[in-house]
Image (cartoon, rainbow, N blue to C red; front, side, top):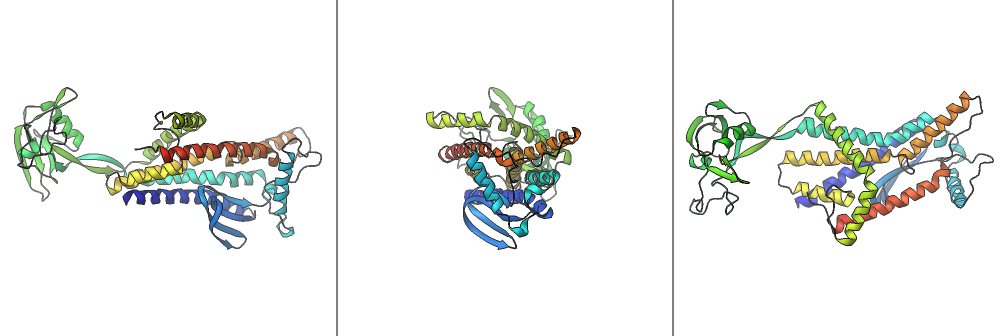
Length: 421
């Protein structure tokens, strides 16, 4: 049940992120007077839609993105500049379809007629929205919830010193330890809810402090002061049992620390987002090679890279694993926020790639147009007019095909060989 709930929560977060991405395009487009005929979350057949004014809002079957449809995305072909070659017919057909959307009453509301700066605002609005969402999600996780810390409060007491035969330190039915030692906490009656306040008269404020005082004292007598849940205090003294880990001997108290959360700072949010940005850029650069490696691993059965690409299916599965991880509610919430925040940062970086049909491709086209016009003015030449982005459609088709193939490979891997946390 918790696994299914986690999947639903993550899918909801993905849908919300996509919808807000499109809203980042939609709001400035409407503000600048462009006619928007569709606002869709998803691709493929429509599951639900409703028309409000001149815009149809809806949800489609395939949750791999979304789009808004603005009229007049491509300018009319300049005289003497008709495209040539094998893709010419497809380019002109796309241009004709774009121009056919413009009624007589819509002239002047086409996307291509806007100044470059306004087109850049519209196309950057979606990725910027994802970047803002990333900071919001990480801000709530870091500032509102914080990082988990182990306190000096006991969540439970381990009855026996863990051994190879009894790694959990569980007592037998008669209360014995099957040949092993009872823990210090069990011997001296410490219990869940007690707070360790001092060891040998030295105050401790966290579990790290407790460990630092206990671990080097194997076999030695220690005095432990605790505060009970009712506020009373007590002090117990006795030898610390020894526990052997990787050939080394440590003192063993026998308490399991309570997890608490320490809110971070704005600087912590910036640091977390910057570290994630660095790793995400590296992942983007390595994405083609990672998909090739993933394809090979699917065919040959080689191990899958734990840090490799994941699809919507994989992200949803991770959400299910988080929900059923056994962590407390605050920890699970923080992990969900970090997961969706990471997704939004990746959407920002991915959509800013200067390739059509991605937003970054349209932004690159606008910057090219602005540069060309600026150079024409400096040279005293006529305005060359808007950049003909329709001529880049062959590139857009190739990129879209590659993205679909890559998505299919990753999705198949997430289904047949999912990643486990």
